[in-house]
Image (cartoon, rainbow, N blue to C red; front, side, top):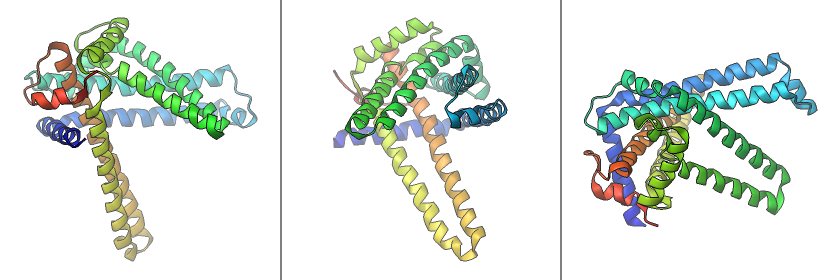
Length: 286
């Protein structure tokens, strides 16, 4: 237990070191967030214009509404996956001894944009199905509803685990979708086993950092409340900025971590900036 926590902390520091070398990597999650916000606002505008909200209240959703929802999922997934692919490509370039920048990352992802789009369609379909199943479980309520939500969560976790290396394989090795999926499963099963301890560690540290950001915002709220409403509003804004900043930093670290693990899974070589015991210890063997 304590060894795992120690490895996770060292892995966090190593990923942070890569980010400190290439600070521009954080722009990829920023671009992704901005893109999703724009798509979301556009979606609400379109659905409001075609009357989807009125039909939703009466339960009379039609085919056009379903197309709009599915289109929103596909475009959102595409934006997230595209910029994640750019981040992984740039991080891989750094780990291979190169000097990446925003342009090189975007170029790497753009060279595989068609395959990324089709992967986004598949991921959107799976995500939409899981969302529908989760909603049905919540509506059912009771013990069966709770069990249903747990099962859906496990299915989502399993999907994330199986497809962990799909994006690196697409953007770095230029593999097709079917080949990327099979190889992703093979790499995970053959090399590390079932449970991704490293990602859990990063998530735990992110949770702690987010709580700290919220605590800072709360303390500022008490102090700035002496200035009246303006002070409270300022504290809320600062809190939002801190929480969003934490989210962006850890989204970047997650992409760096994925690139490092891909390097090791593909050729057995630990990236120069990463120590052997941290990479090997990031997964529990089968």
